[in-house]
Image (cartoon, rainbow, N blue to C red; front, side, top):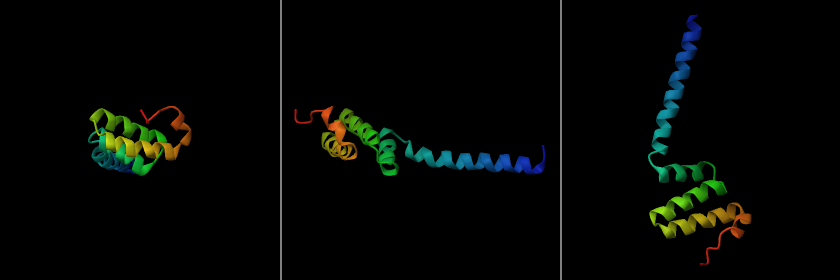
Length: 85
């Protein structure tokens, strides 16, 4: 294997290590993961996962705010859940 190939592999591994190191901060826990997900790609699925997390934590005010974002992202989803109960 040539020197260039070894250098390229080393740089590739160092790049992947740096990217992994940055992701560790995002994946500290479920809340940081889903908050980052909605910040990076605010899809209805990411917001809905945040809603489910807040509900299991008993943070119902936060869940309502996040659910509002779900319905804004995809209004068709409002027919599946009755939040008035």
